[in-house]
Image (tube, rainbow, N blue to C red; front, side, top):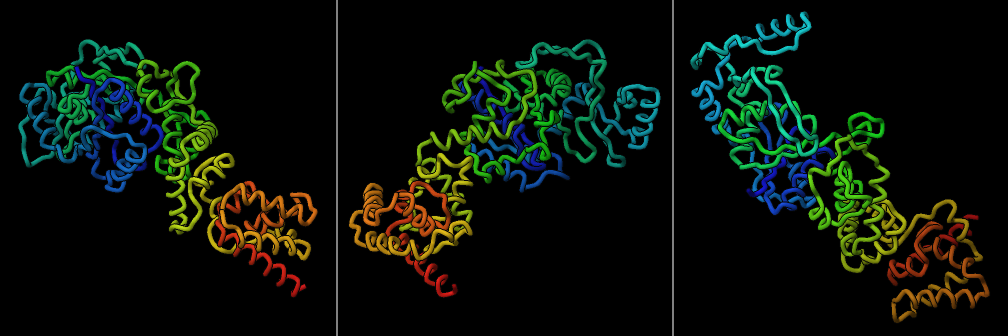
Length: 471
């Protein structure tokens, strides 16, 4: 039997870590088993589903490169399939039309709560075999058996048992003709040949209801694996307050997809003490049975630690492609003649937590002029003018723009003025960058490029001259 998994989000808001982890686990299991991974958009909630949320789902999957073999399928385009299945169950005596008013149902619930009973439908219309009519609205309910138990082995949670007497006749088709979640998910899983369902533990109570519907439709239910939910650092369910962002917000904050995927797989799954996994290793090693039963806690610092690792270890070309994105977001002109992005990555990869931070730091390498920080201004004075002028002339004569040649020119300059290297380095660094902190000075100058470096030295000399005139 070919393994077929699915990711079936509702487009009712942003896609968060818990949801994308579910998608990733299903993707991994399909790839590990040489199976298929299907994307299904469960958009039957007409009031809350939006095109914007659907696009966020698609964009998130694309960014993380979680490719799907079939889909996306939209439940809103499959309504005839659900209606046909519901009518079939009615014909077989396994579902029925219910005309109970909302007032009656509300009163029934109040009475049951007053009597300390579990609120549930009382089967008022269960045996009446009521026909379809346009005069009054009705719902279709599944005729659940009150005898026996539902037993299944969960790939994560182990053996689980539910008594049918604890379940009621749930609504499978609403009065507006739209299906409810527990019904359309079964019809779709059956139609799409889904063999394994990996989803959040908050769906466990839905599973016995869905298994009973599968059996009523003459089918075997998929194998289920319910993944514990993610907790925030405060021990409560992950939320915006406890640090959760939507998937694309992590991208916008400068997190690499490799780091996020590595973090997600370890957020509830383990393979010995190994922390860092290539995508190939994840596919090879992932087993649903190895998912932990205990809830995992979100740790933003651990995510940043992984991000730092990937910024340092990935090929500079890969990181440069991310840097390109963030610089364009900052409206930076990346035409020829600007600093090489791969060189910028090498210069900053040891100094940043995110690629967004790298982009902000790299801003200082664009433009012909700089703004001097208050601390930096003290290094630009009449004492620094002679060797700034000398170095400017030296750069103008340079025939080969190479880091080692620039470094040699700086050492020669220090000897020429009989100064320690640090005495000339800081004024020149300030002249180049407007601050006292930068990558090594020779690399900084190299990244700026010859023309821009000379222009910035001219700007520093002009600043000193203007300051002296004002003084």
